[in-house]
Image (cartoon, rainbow, N blue to C red; front, side):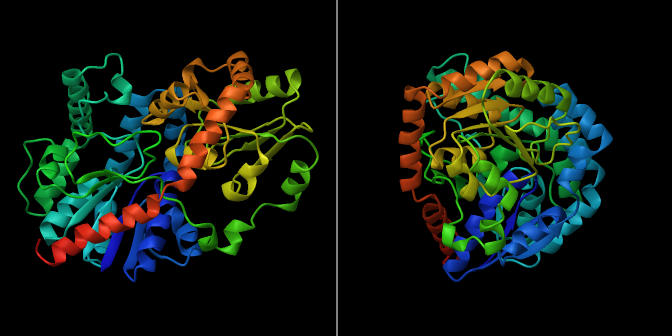
Length: 425
């Protein structure tokens, strides 16, 4: 099969698809990954075929307007900005998506590309499978959507998902129907998610059932597979051995450090984080490995207990750390737990608060919304996650995640779905 994977967003929206592409290639399929152009080096570094989608997500976040929005620490404003930025490049972005779909027979898409890829798939009569790395948005009576967990009973729980679908449709309705008209398709009067749902596509949630068990009232096309992780033997040398000698030397100079980083999440209020970092270094003996990622930090402190870098190889470095402080991205959470690390999730937006609540409920970490974050709260949380109870819980869940076969499950489901299409079933 000739399969195209279409994704847009941050590194956390790309990395799991590298694992999926490698898994599909092992089964003799042809695969391309279509993603923002700034991920070309990452994808091709794994020997994969890359198709650039127009735009650069890092530049969006680090533009003057992006930084201004990030500083508000407001989820709604950030989502509005993201969709506004995509609207501004919609012409060349759509063109690059069409060029990518033209190269393949089957499509795997994420939520960010769905309004465009679903329309192209319909126009070209190609089957599409949906994949997500966030808590499910498929209605269930078993539990409410994370952002609406004020109550918990069946009819309310199902309603919370409907509200989320309406919220998503509000953001993408105009863009979706504009593009459908360009392609000569009828405009949608119903929610895009409901419209696609009636076609019963494969709908994979590539996250751990140890954290979110699969609801018993889902239809068979919805699956929770387990996290998608690149097998160690598949990691190219330049990614596996990228830890610089200076970092290795620092790691060996004292106790295991706290990993702190926010990846491609983007931190707007960098001054607040610098003040917190200074307080931790001056009031505790904690060592901190600080990864700046996409964030534009200036005037970070110089201290013997602090090491600053842009990125690290999680597989190589996390075993040498004792805990993780991060934004709550699903991929980073998986990496932390796979290495038995208790966590502090400082949530900014989208699915991050839900992962934070799960960490607290399952007692393998602490959740602090970024708006409520200060140095005292973080120092208190650092003490809490180093208790035996929290560390033991993180270790137990880490063992379960390491024993899951998320990549194998996802590949099998995709093969079965697309093969059924090939045979007309």
